Length: 439
Image (cartoon, rainbow, N blue to C red; front, side, top):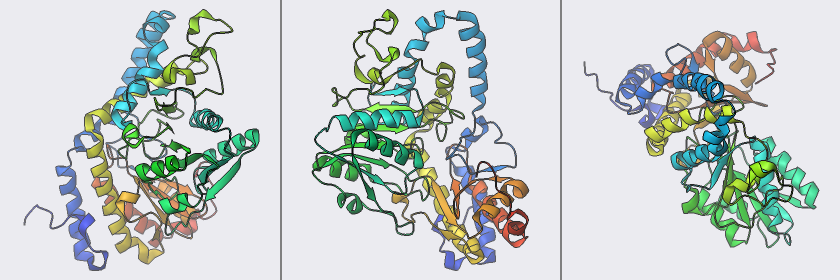
């Protein structure tokens, strides 16, 4: 019998999938893994050799094995060996060094435009507050109703401070949103457009170019939240003309829990002022002068002492993305999610599931959300009975995140098969009353 797959599962019509075809699709997974040009990178991640199936890389990426080595070297040689001398030798510039590495690997940004430090929330506040100050005669911020709560909290805070109005782009979870929906909210009073490149619930992926152009045509600045796209979706901020962007490093960049966020600022905004001044963002940090000037470039958005240890641990994941190349990462992401959706249509839709992410891969990031009326119970059963780690988003969504550097096609098949077992085996009833601290 031929070992070549008859068809990739991503190409299968769900209506044609009978039991025999599904068996063939399972065989295809091994063949696809064998042909995957990124498959060899999986072994570099801690835990990748176990039977656990991990689909929560869009909330917390797996650690690289080399990260432990990097931490040990830092503690023993840099911190332990060099002590305070480490600031002169490397640490002062580390936020910019790692920022430049992220820019080169994932952002299409030039050196000196990106820095690392603070949390996503703090950097979003700095960026939004600064951009609104550049448009003092405008009084509205446009944002999406279904974006991550942090973005909405920050926008509401800035609006209270400056007396601004928030104009909401409404979202139909089934149909998604469009550039026309954004255009309808723009006016001569729009100061800033703040949107998530990939929506955290549905996986909807905006057209960066089109939306940025719309905002600029209205005379507004645009601030993108890249948390659910950086490291999974190719981004070219300078080619598109993006003004500012913020993103985290603990998802697809695998920097670890609580690792610092990054901020990109266009070189075309030299008058942008950091609203939270601090000694580290001055032009001579070690002079300790009260009246010091602001640092040039993106350095001016630094505030306090940066998180040196966690910033250093971001580098291994970024290095691996540079090695893999974002185009290959995206190609695999699309192939994984297409296969998943095909199998969901065939095997899970009859069990009460619905795909609640865009079916057009150009409008989808690297996760797929499924509706189920008992989504939380299904998720808990998968975690505790089937070793499938995913996450639940209230009230009724399960998110399956595809991290292409370590997610395999066989993982996709296993996740669907184990979900079938959970539902048909009564897992929903066993876990219906369990409410975890972290969904």
